[in-house]
Image 1 (tube, rainbow, N blue to C red):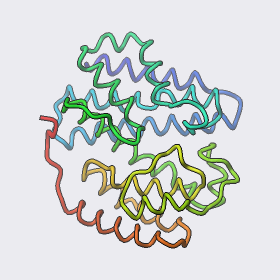
Image 2 (image 1 turned 60 degrees about the horizontal axis):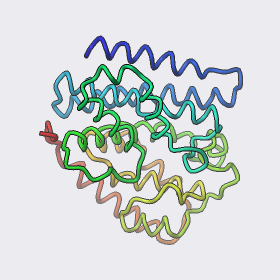
Image 3 (image 1 turned 135 degrees about the vertical axis):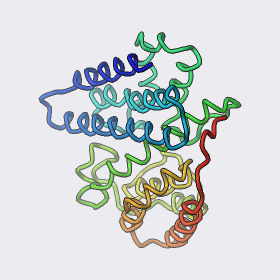
Length: 267
């Protein structure tokens, strides 16, 4: 597995570089995802170790982190956006790339299935129902590793000025207010449908709703300690109903961060 993992890293580095271009706008998005891929891979590996995974499963977590956003590069090169609703679902694009790699055939059938499942559901509103505890474990792990770094990525874009510099996450003329249905979801502690995003404010509040979808205390503590929660709360407009959602969120974070992860949750 160690040699295969090394080959996968080398291939992915070459694949990302193949999208380098003289177009500064496209290159900004490609570079953003190159850096993100590195951080998520490291996050996945660190979280797996924290949870007591052995060498084999830690390598699987690293593979999933490495390939989770492989579809983003084709997406941005073709559509000039990272908005799945305005282009294609980047996880589905990623699966198409993976299906063309002989690396997947060199994994066991069970391991290849885990990688595909985790990549497929890393960006969905919910993980598909499954009785396979290992599938569920790795899908949860990559969702946490990914979200932890997306907070870092989005931090510079929280101000109105910064939002207009984001690589087409939302239209540059989108309003800063939060749509009423998103405020209701936030106050209730629910996840929201990404495809309903209409404003910069919607996108910010959805990132806060992600907190309820964080699976491991290890991840939540890092999100809290790095100031991401406070920064996103401070970026929200003063609209009726938001304060109730913020109070609920802070109470939830305080309670969850007082808990501990259990090693080897997947059995």
